[in-house]
Length: 255
Ligand SMILES: Nc1ncnc2c1ncn2[C@@H]1O[C@H](COP(=O)(O)OP(=O)(O)OP(=O)(O)O)[C@@H](O)[C@H]1O
Ligand SMILES: [Mg+2]
Image (cartoon, rainbow, N blue to C red; front, side, top):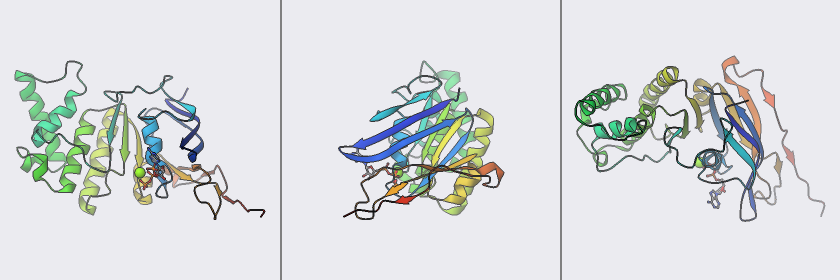
């Protein structure tokens, strides 16, 4: 059985369909890039995986069970807008990320010194070692995002959910974050879902690139139908062979 299964998911807000007939099976350790037009429901799909919302119809399972409501050890998450602890220094933000893995929480004494030393190694890798003693508010947006990514990655969750994590970074920083993510993934074997607007990034990092789109489209009423997965590309095979799951059809009105 696949590690993560979405079985015929429908999600509506009020009477507006957002997602329809979304089915997906992902093996443990796979990296799935998610692309699609703005507003088509990519972040909604991540929220369903996070159990922040329950689908209107259909079910999601992780390792055979409904996803736990608390992300904790199982799932880590980085949204486009950086989310770090404002009252902790940069170094202690990384230590806090690692401590999520420990059932008893915080580190003390020698364990805390060792955790800080590991955090300093991480800070070198993400290029934030020179600001280790500063607070997040004193950093640029790109630096805060790097910190948020570093914090989620050191917790080594089984599933990492990334919602446009590199969107705000300059090209050089983006490349070094790609390397950091690739290395950590190789070390941990974690399963990754990453929403991106950058197709090249999606194919570079992903094993698969899935496309959300609306197969049924009414030009007079763009909100009439929900989106589903229309393509599932094998990114490790030059993007081919790819599977066209649904052809786009225009709904013609009879009146
Ligand atoms: N809680 C909510 N209540 C009502 N509508 C919502 C809610 N959350 C999202 N939506 C709507 O659902 C649709 C999909 O939103 P979502 O944020 O998932 O899109 P997205 O693909 O992530 O877009 P983007 O690429 O711009 O981030 C949008 O039309 C949005 O307005
Ligand atoms: Mg989004």
